[in-house]
Length: 103
Image (cartoon, rainbow, N blue to C red; front, side, top):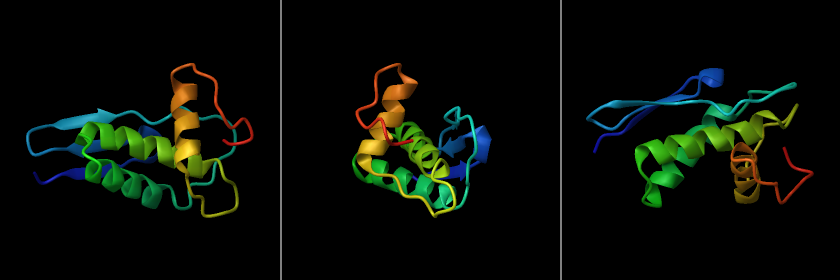
């Protein structure tokens, strides 16, 4: 499979798996953001999710979650830990975050 993924900032991500496109919506955010490193983080998370056996659509979702973590880290090239990504995913589904001090 020749996978392609395009990061689109606040518009999320577009992925193509060789058969069709999927539009992966961005994580809704409020307040100030710093986009430095968000694309790199998204692509890294996509690669990690694919390497772990995820579908391209699942990988795109993971990329958007990871980027949502990094853009909330102001004035630094953000990173996203597994725990921070899980916290954002839980907030998206209405669950309570484990690390309340994380974005």
